Length: 306
Image 1 (cartoon, rainbow, N blue to C red):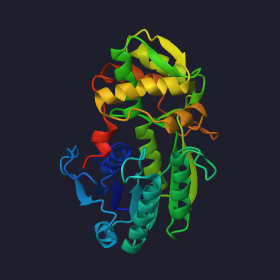
Image 2: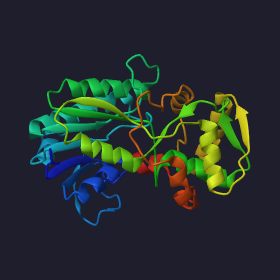
Image 3: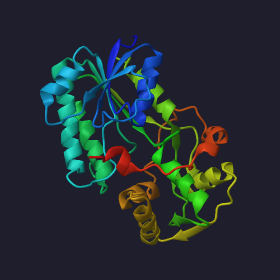
Image 4: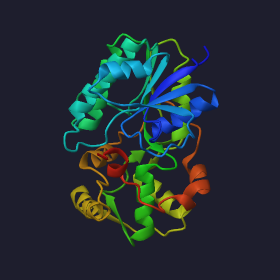
């Protein structure tokens, strides 16, 4: 069935939500974004309407969604900070789903993560599972997309790894570096999410790219594409994280968390299903490596501004 004429997207001025919004605009879909940072630079030239993402006012959220048929939810947090916790993020997600139901939204497309689990000891992956269950119980048709490692321009992880490779003579490798990752291009995730809105049945699907590498291979490819001879030093994760934390103090950011390292090292950013993305990581690198790592991208500045 064709895509409805109006959609709501959380975080269109951010990363994954921005790709979804651009994909929708190319299909002449009217887009409204819910954002916590309305002062963020508008890269859409006014084509995307803006409404507050205020979890304390469910009625206002519902009013912002009125008239739309599809809600694309990309809201989540990378780590806990201050009053921002994973438990609160789960509750906020439920608030969004209830607001969508009250507004008459007919389909929710939710961006989750690969391999979420109630039994996971990692709060990020456990919380993602809890949000999926809340969505399934809300009573609105849904599609759940579970991406692996998303890459693309303005990506935090790969850009900041490239930034480090450009500036430091060695790269601390967490453990032996042989754990698998399966990168998927952000545009491929957006295409899959938008297509999901036109499917009437409820479903859950992974979003994974066509290539799987070890983490060390991935970083090696990145360095090679930038013309850098990477020197890896394999270290216990605790030692590598300590060095990463020192860099974090310099750039005033949380570069990487222990949970994120554990997720990488246990292979959670891979899929057991057939790939859905078509963009090969190497092809993308060959066209974009010269721009990667020129500037550090701060998670705190992007998503934790007061």
